[in-house]
Length: 363
Image 1 (cartoon, rainbow, N blue to C red):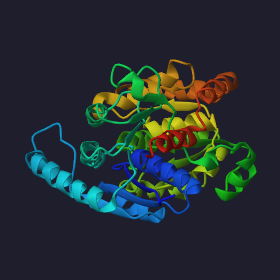
Image 2: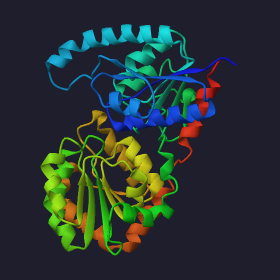
Image 3: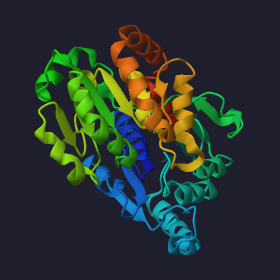
Image 4: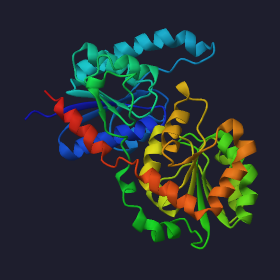
């Protein structure tokens, strides 16, 4: 059998990068001698994260359209044309068997060129409300792996498969890691642990909220692990002086931090939502209102509607946060109910099922 070749494209945020890496890892475990190439957007985080995971990557000069008139918007047609040309060169030289897109700016031109060249393409749509790029690409895509039900109004139903989102496999068995996690993060096992996640880039509004509420948490016998994001770390690292607070830019051991957590406050990016379903902790979602099509609110609502989590809009944090958080903290029954319901929504075999679909397309 000839050596298989796969191109994967996804980037801009961890929510697009990590699913692509998870898919590549699963493909590699099945085809150890296969060749892989990632394509990302120059200057975005995938240019660091993908090589760290052991894969080569090429960058395209591409960015999304801004919602306001900027210099970047006037350059967009040039960037798009340049990226289409470079994508054509990459595909012609690498000759992939299948091209897989997990979202992000670079996947648009790359999958478009692959579609024109007649190479099978797979879209992995993480959100409950797809972005414009994937909607356009879906017309020619060979297969669309989705994480939420009822996406027929966006995609051809004949091409869609409900798989869920790829998640880190080390999150599947966290229940037996609690003792290790308490030691690793040097926590007090008699206190409740609150985990705060602002997404891979951090969240200004969540950080402002936690900075305001942190004294209250300490007085309620709550210890906090607060992932503030690299852009905000200098601003908030002073809180590390308090022994009940750990402020970090980034968390490497997500398995252990989830094992340690009793309650989670999180953004509602697609990958975060999928991971949180798997680990089954009581969650308060604070969706980012600054994303395309407000898809974080839609992701969170899909869980909240099934009584698997609580949701506070960013605009209502000042009026609602204390009530919602204190109710959850003091109500063990509610904590158990949310945990039970959110776990029912997990799709732990997503990566394997996506790769099964990819394999069917190999000519």
